[in-house]
Image 1 (cartoon, rainbow, N blue to C red):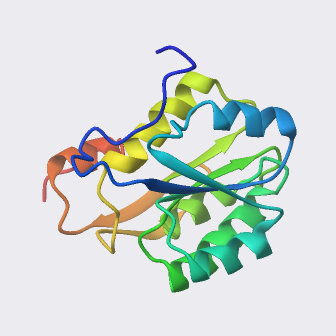
Image 2 (spheres, helix red, strand yellow):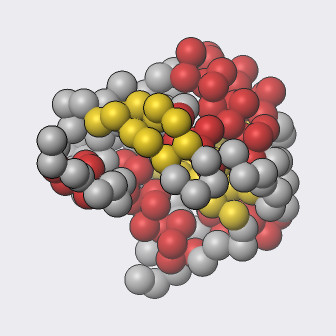
Length: 174
């Protein structure tokens, strides 16, 4: 995929403008992300930090929020937990330079769309943004029961087989 291909929702037949909130971090990462959002489809807003992002997301609906890679994974998950109370359907992509072993599990538990360590290829970000806009929101269909850095136990309800395969979960009979 070309790096300059814009993220858009192929199912967006109404030509509705999408709103994305980027949490400021390094200028290099901002420029990488900005290239992915077609200005004819996306309105880009910015927040200086997670607290400002939460304030903005409480007062305005965003289709997607992308955290700054300068925050820790735990800070991204903390934002996600608070965001779920105000805007349960907003998709969040957590980017981080620093993470602890439980951060990915907690991101899954609180329904982050994705959790990535930087650096990350532009093409990968492009695919994630496209998937975020066309995949259904996980509303209580998946619950993390227990997990460690080696494994995770999930309960999947009201989930079509495609969604389970999307999660790369091995479905066991019984």
